[in-house]
Amino acid sequence: MTFQDLIPVIYLITAVTFILGLKGLSGPTTAVGGNRIAAAGMIVAVAATFATKEYGSYGSGGLALTIGGMAVGAVMGVAGGRLVKMTAMPQMVAIFNGCGGGAAALVSILEYTHEAQSGAPLAWGAVLSSVLGLMIGGVSFSGSAIAYAKLQGVISARAYRYPGQRLITGVVFVAMILLAAWLVLGAAGLVAHARLLVLVALAVAALLAGLALVLPIGGADMPVVISLLNAFTGLAVAMAGFVLSNQLLIVAGTLVGASGTILTRLMSKAMNRSIANVLFAGFGAGAGAAVGAREGDTRTQRAISAEDAAILLGYAQSVIIVPGYGLAVAQAQHAVRELADMLEAKGASVRYAIHPVAGRMPGHMNVLLAEANVPYEKLYDMDQINEDFKNTDVALVIGANDVTNPAARADKSSPIYGMPILNVDQARNVIVIKRSMRSGFAGIENELYLDPKTGMLFGDAKKAVEQVIAELKKAG
Image 1 (tube, rainbow, N blue to C red):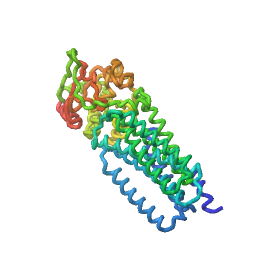
Image 2 (cartoon, rainbow, N blue to C red):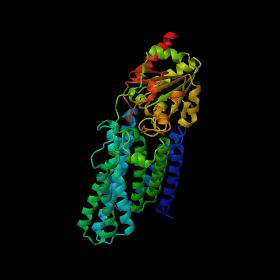
Image 3 (spheres, helix red, strand yellow):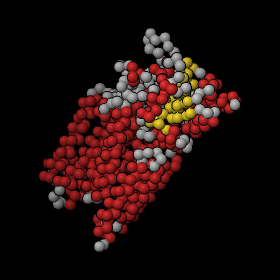
Image 4 (cartoon, rainbow, N blue to C red):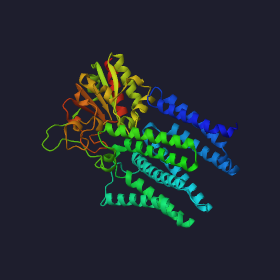
């Protein structure tokens, strides 16, 4: 038995490490170990790939190019992991995901070009795999780029709507499908240059389809969109595996595609909305509007000081902290951990309630609080803690908006009606820390802010929490 015969076995073992890695990512206590297992498997897989006969045919030039590309990617990965702030982690995830989709699309283009220029008849299966890889990878690349731009603030996070939008989007997708069908079914009679022109047109159509898909989606839905685009990238990688006849790419891509699809479905369910509604409803179009009482509603928000908040928290026996994107923007996680430690030293029970779509990516709040060494056992999912709010002395909301809005339960005209929310309004007292009365990414009023038992502590989340800590220290 030669080493070449062992490569499929190595790929199989590596696939098992990927599965174990995904299993580890299912919980915060095992996530680090899962990542390390999957990373070790990937290193082994890359090393084995260098030894394959197919790779050996590229010669020393191919080896130098590959190593150079890996070096550049390694530098970018290390820089991204160490230098990018936690507030920008969703953007980094989006752009890295887009790079994966773009890479898969490029593989499909190059392999199809190589086959077309060889003069040999094109195998139907190889052409289909190349076309699907290009379509899915192109949509993932451009869609992820738009998601990055929205999260980074390069373009507005609102949902872009324009006259004839649905018609234009439909035309783009139909054109992409027709071009793909032409390449798969009818391009055999075309000369090589004509095939390549159709391939370029398909690539452009795929990029435009990604733009058309993500631009109309508001910022409130970005966690779902990022998860869905991650699934797209996985499928594109699987198609690239078929193109290259690489079993490991097929398995890895399928795992990513399946896990991303499941996560997308779970997050959509957490919002009580279908994936189709997320993609095509234009939810979040009015983000940024000021929040205030409706016409005829005499209620107003009640502003409080840091001293008032400290008094409430100082006498509380049970506190639930609800983190949101405002906490991430202010980098307030360490101050929040210090506040929780002080309250616990006074005998209070402190827990954290995490909504499935809080923040700008799946698990954003969990990662943020883990950075501040908040114990994992104090982090509770919505379903685990929602019934406890009614027995809680103080609910402290820091930067969360749409996921605490009671309109989701009571207002049938609200765009978020039916979305499961954290039952913050059922707590005996509510403290909300936010910069202003402007709305969240959903662009709608939050009824919680007008509740008589809600106190609004305005200001930067980190500074506001530090002021509360200072007041608690004064009180002793």
